[in-house]
Amino acid sequence: PDPDAAAVQAAMARNGQLTKPPGALGRLEDLAIWMAGWQGTDRPHVDAPQVIVFAGNHGVTARGVSAFPAAVTEQMVLNFRAGGAAINQLARCFGARMDVHALSLELPTADFTIQPAMTEAELLEALQTGWDAVDPASDLLVTGEMGIGNTTSAAALAHAICGGVPADWVGRGTGVDDAGLALKAQVVAEGVALHAQARADGIEALRCLGGRELAAMAGAILRARHLRIPVLLDGFICTAAAASLDAAKPGALDHCLAAHVSAESGHAPLLAHLGKAPILSLGLRLGEGSGAALAIGVIKGAVACHSGMATFAEAGVSEG
Amino acid sequence: PDPDAAAVQAAMARNGQLTKPPGALGRLEDLAIWMAGWQGTDRPHVDAPQVIVFAGNHGVTARGVSAFPAAVTEQMVLNFRAGGAAINQLARCFGARMDVHALSLELPTADFTIQPAMTEAELLEALQTGWDAVDPASDLLVTGEMGIGNTTSAAALAHAICGGVPADWVGRGTGVDDAGLALKAQVVAEGVALHAQARADGIEALRCLGGRELAAMAGAILRARHLRIPVLLDGFICTAAAASLDAAKPGALDHCLAAHVSAESGHAPLLAHLGKAPILSLGLRLGEGSGAALAIGVIKGAVACHSGMATFAEAGVSEG
Image 1 (tube, rainbow over the protein chains, first blue to last red):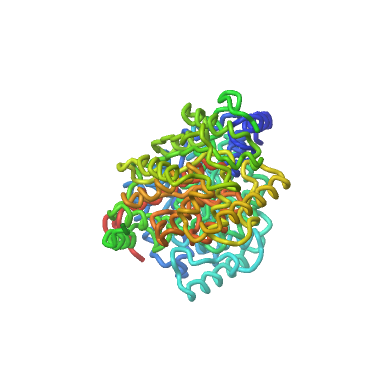
Image 2 (image 1 turned 90 degrees about the vertical axis):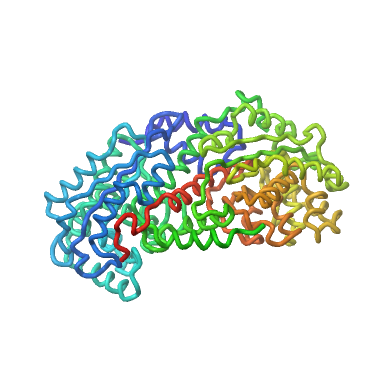
């Protein structure tokens, strides 16, 4: 579905009557009107945001692409469930429901430099997990991830979809050194060369080079579109997963905003490829949905102003 | 007073133990540690933020420098009191107490192209109003303003303090056209020429070229320093008022963050003069404290992560 054109028109008309000079709330005005279109009302709201964190393990970690051991994925899932991670604090801070889905952590994806990361059945299962994880009653969605090795997977996906060279898309992830960075570029080059046929097909690229948590994010983002729930894209990995949907069908991410631009070096060019201007730029590079959860606050502020302010007529203020 | 060095050290130590790769929360980590220093604790908090909006009228409006009539200042004060303005929605959204102080609206400042905007007694009264308005129990302060004509006053103040030429500091305010912009530059040039002696003295510049609401913001920011309450600076007018304190005493704004960079053209160079990097950049140009109130959400997120996250040891997560 597309945004509700009548709601957009009504929201624009309302925006012009609010007690402020025209355009004085800058991007907050655009964000509120955009929310109005997807929510189908001239009074958009953020009363029930949902944060979903998906976790998966990656066979490509066998190549030594991460500064952390793969066991950390599961340890962090326990941390999410115990409420101790950054995303827990941010979800609570902005009044979001938070769900955690660990996807077959005991069964990492295959090393994509040797074979496709997932079988078709595995891909479908992960997409379905994401699809089912979205609460239809939520009014704003954040999809986050945890998966040791997944910046390498995301870089391979971005390289397959956007082109360029591997160095355009690999970054330091959780903190690899220069040698680690060169290794990541090598691994990405091998993977994309092996799965060259997938470059023309976003979903096939997701299967061959992605991971379960990336596929689950894509499934959730797709479900949100069907429910017309606006989505805040998080960092590089979330955006790479989303880019597979855009590659499959241009416009598939029209219901998504870029919440922030992360410090992971491939994120800014990936957002540029998607034509999305980030709301925040604070040097985050944690994943988990953290940057997107922080942007819930900005969206809350935007819709609070739009839906709560008095008009010139209501307040008896001269329009200048 | 200065930040608590022991609290900063303790907060840095804690930050290094939290369950995330080092530096992965980017600027949020710096903000939390900075808050720790001013609040004197390794677990900073934003439980009682305060927004204070000061309103004043400006004699220089007789020169036709604003797109809105001067009567709008009082009309907007009524709107603030009725809860209908943007700042009311943002203060509520981020759990801030909001206070409104109208400063002698029936008595505009003098036209600064003819004589000093305020007498010494008037300046002191406005500074005192700001000083007294700060709640000592608040843990984060936003000072906002309303005053038709006050971008011209702020531009004159910025020009007097920072130098350059008037065109560096005048902007479109609530929405003047090209002729209005040229007139503002002319008025600023006249005012700064008339009060040339004030250029070396931030507080005298504030008296001659500022306004009651600017002086009140300066008084509140000064009081916050004495109470070690961190301050979020809002847009161009708030920052110009603050710059008078910095001109009077370098370092006087060490307890202040630049909440955002506004669309008012003089704001970015003024922040650069003060050496402050904005947290948000969303094209706002409303004043009222709106951009700073929005940034309360970012600070809340930063301290929530810092003070609420589990350490590696607590969560049983490997440190890589």
